Length: 117
Image (cartoon, rainbow, N blue to C red):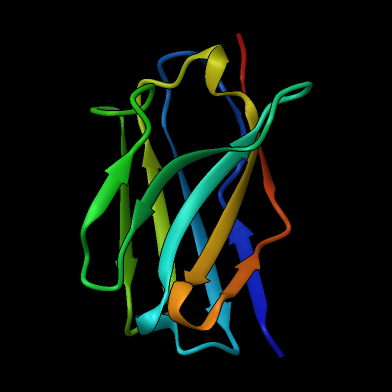
């Protein structure tokens, strides 16, 4: 049974920081590319950051220099360190796992991040 448990969301003031984590089970975690997506009210879901099985990272322009994605294959977790948060970062953040060769993709349930004073 594939399961993703996300944690770390919440309410933070502008300029603050949060760390999101996603713990995966039921998949061979190390072969999957992992990513964080977000969806704000009335907007489409967008890629925030991704990390390949070999550790290469990619970021949306809007978060470059502020967010850092990392993975721990020993613990089957992927994390997103978010700094200098602003209200435009408010969204539901989703963990994603993708293995293109097998057309395999999974999503977490989402965690709310709200940036407000």
